[in-house]
Length: 308
Image 1 (cartoon, one colour):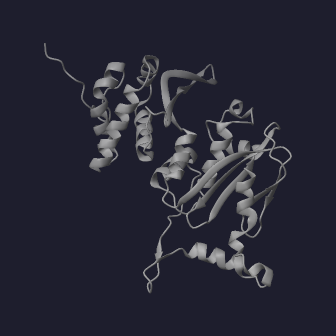
Image 2 (cartoon, helix red, strand yellow):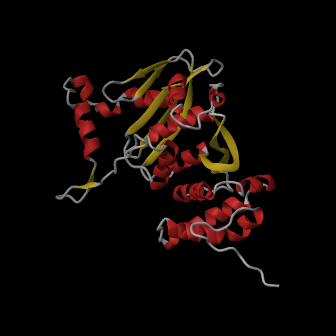
Image 3 (spheres, rainbow, N blue to C red):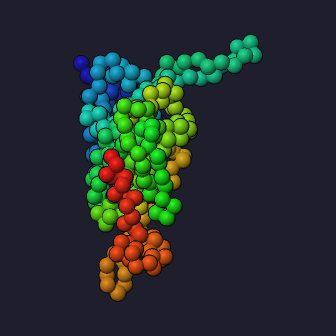
C-alpha cells in the first residue's frame, strides 16, 4: 500500500492533526522559509530545530490545540523564537493559543462567533531576558529589585540615574520596580517605574489582562515591563534582545543602530555619546573639593546598588 503525503497547495502544507505536526513540520518549515525569502542555510536549520523543539516538547492536550492554530501565526511564532534564540523545551519561550473569532450579522445585529481556530502568541520568560542581558559583552552587572513603601525615590537631574533614601522593608507593600545595567566601563543605565506607571504602560498591549496586575509584590509581569523598557535605553544590545523587544512591543518599539566610531589617529573605538555625557557632567566641576571625583561617578550609582 502506497502512502501519500499532502504537499503544499499554494501556500501551506497540512498541519491539521497531531500526526501532521509530527510528520510534516520539516516540510512546512522549509515551505515557510521560501515564502519569507529566508535563504540563510544556518537560520533555516535553526528554524527547523526550533519548530521540532516546539512540537515534541508539548503535552498531548497542547498538541491537539497546536493543530487548531492558524498555520501562519504558528510559524510566525516559531520565527520569533528562532530570531531570539529561545527554546520552547527549556521554557525560555511559551506559546499561548488565543481563540479566533469572526464577525457575523443576524437580524441586523453584529456579533462575534468562535471559528474553532486559534491564534498563536508567544511569551518570553523573564529569566531568559535577564540571561540575554548578562550575556552582552559590555555587561559588568545587571540586577532588578522591588521598591517598597517608605522608600523615597530620587532622580539625579544631571545623570538621569536613580537614587533611593529610606529602608526598603520587604514586609511593606510594593510601590514600584527597579532595574539597573552597568557596563564594563562603569556606565550605568537604570529604570524605575511605579506600579501605576507599569500598569498604564502594559495597557498598550492588546493582550493586557488586568488580573495579572492585581498583586503588586513578587510579580513577574511588573518586573518584565521595567526590564523591557530598560533594554531600550542601553546603547549596545544583541539582535536576540532586539527581536524580543520588537515582538513584545510592535509597533511601539523603535531602535537606532549603535555605530562604533573609530578614532582615525589612534585606531581606537570611541563612544562619542558617552564622551559627551562625561564632558557635560564634569563641565562645572571647578571647586577643589569636587575635582577628585568625576561627576559621572556620583554616589547615585553606588547608593542604588548598596540600597538593594
